[in-house]
Picture 1 (cartoon, rainbow, N blue to C red):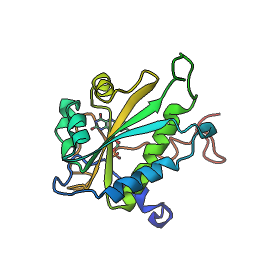
Picture 2: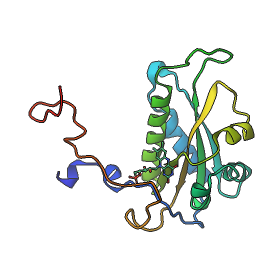
Picture 3: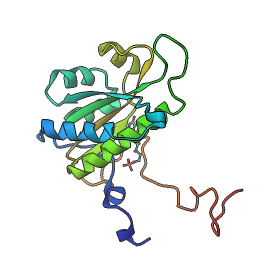
Length: 189
Ligand SMILES: Cc1cc2nc3c(=O)[nH]c(=O)nc-3n(C[C@H](O)[C@H](O)[C@H](O)COP(=O)(O)O)c2cc1C
């Protein structure tokens, strides 16, 4: 595949396990990240997302760091920004699903935020390694919302191949393997 057909974001993006602990993210960059997330498409324009945003050194950051797992606690606090990604799962006060696509839409919003981070020269490492219930309690997240994932953003140190964590891999399935049906390339159906 000729590299010039694929956007540099797709070719260069990786999830760093080391961040520059001296990099300070400007407030305007935080606004730009949230702006990109805000503009993400969602099912029925339901926008089932919200974000807890802590810049390294501020009070929200300190409260987020408290609930990291041992694994993410080793690298995420050095990132310039920590974000907890929230999904609206239910209609408030009911067991009704808010949107069939809530998780899908949150994931897309984080993808757009990640693309925006790349534009600002930053990298993003999404992760699940935190105490979901404790973090929800810390920020008074109501029962119809879920703290789904977190992301650490900042200036990456090192290259994509130098820093792989336990249980993580950068191996990818081939294009053919992820193509269920396509004329001339059919895998199934
Ligand atoms: C929803 C989600 C949860 C993840 N959880 C963790 C995690 O808990 N710890 C971690 O080190 N990486 C985590 N990752 C990062 C993946 O391991 C990483 O994206 C994958 O190994 C591919 O590597 P790359 O992003 O560098 O291409 C997570 C990624 C996603 C999207």
